[in-house]
Length: 156
Image (cartoon, rainbow, N blue to C red; front, side, top):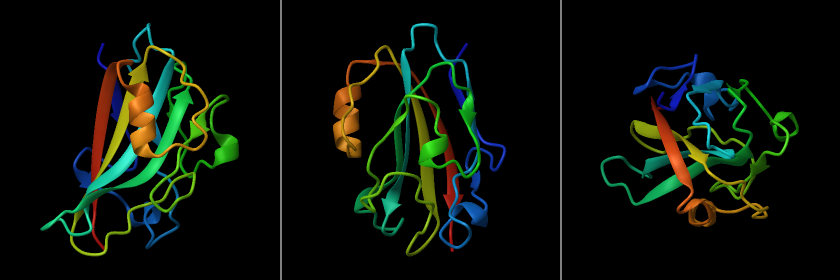
């Protein structure tokens, strides 16, 4: 069975509702997953926007959310989840606002794509002490056994 990532809030390539953006409550959408491989020891979730700052001339990928060491037995995250509610053992990285936790879509111009990427790893990562996306990806290198992606779009 393949690893599958979905959300009851939006479909793949569909529009992310306003409440999950800086124009709304800026809370995370509910996410659900299935098909975690038996050899998985942890899961990683990365949400980023490769269209920053302008989809017509992207210059960077803006990181919105980093979670790692999610238990492989977990099946999703509730809408509006905060640090204290994350599954036991889950650690957070630093988004591009230099904070832990979710930062919703807030594109300066145009319609952006927001990639929610779930990775199953064959290891439990050490405490990386609030890593950046690059640090987290370096620690994951060689340990990804499956991955899934859910893309939503948003425009002010």
